[in-house]
Image (cartoon, rainbow, N blue to C red):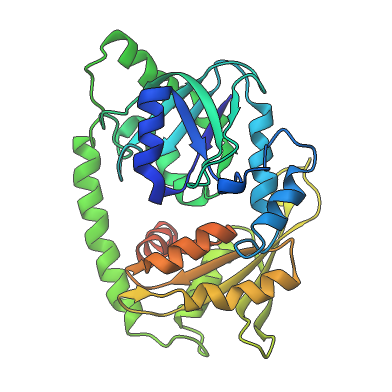
Length: 331
């Protein structure tokens, strides 16, 4: 099996040090200096949620972390943006659960959860996320926002990279030449679309930024159930969306609920957009959250808050790329 494995990017130097010196890949939500949050505990999810109540709106992230209990000897862990942004590294797990697991009782970085690693590839920055071999995975990377997610559909892609590195350890997987040209062309088109969207109304008309976001959500199977909900205390949801899981697979039942905050911002979107979602998500703990903004980026505070609560931040470039893919189509 292969998993996408995200960690606290503010701790990248410590994560790298442990990998290189101790062959341990670290994960957060471990209790920090006080410890007591060993993933092997049967009540880990509840204990983790209680310990990080100020940072979590639900048990989604602690529950997601229990995927580590499925780890087997030889499984692959893919860590995007390690050793640096735009790069990716691949790691082979050493031992089945829980022999591969190492818990550090006291750790001020909160990276108490560590996984033993046999071998790592890409720690020298020699695997670019935009290499053609990994394009299928990279195209979905923005959706893989939880700490541990199985990505078996792309296992062959990463295994081919490992095979090449085993044959030639000095091999590099750089941004592909053709991809680079196409990426520049796509970026120009995205800039043009963003300029056009910046001139339209934020909402309230048939052709507004909010209606564009609704169209994109509908194209991914969501129904817009309600619009513009408030709790009178700062909570604000522009779009309440529902998708039937059976639309994705006949073996999945029930519904996925997505609460969306839409911002037609220019420049940077700050943490307020995320804060507006949190009270509404606390009222509906099984709901996912998303901020869709035309802005170029999100503030560091917004990114940190969204990461803690498992909220997807979708900026203007991502929205325009999705829109570009659907131009000329019908809903």
